[in-house]
Image (cartoon, rainbow, N blue to C red; front, side, top):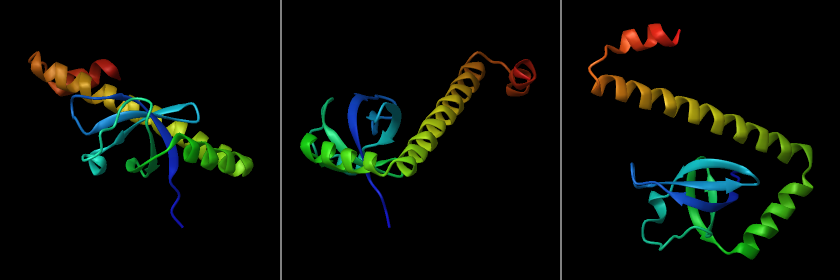
Length: 119
């Protein structure tokens, strides 16, 4: 069974343009919105998120109904939110490392020197 979780669109990103930030029960996460390129998405819209992709736009009332149902699952839903929170943290760390590497290369630094400084 596949599970989609409602997320509220918070912000859109220019680089790359098919990424947006959603809020899923208090956890903010970047997702890919390319599958909904034909939609006129705006901050405040709700989307159904599955494995990091916005699969469809849904109404706020539908999102609330699904979130209420998921919250009734208790610990199982709490565990999923914890995993989502951890994955968002890991993703932010990885993105920070990639940006630092990009900036060091633009500045003419050797990536190995950057790693040595970090370690």
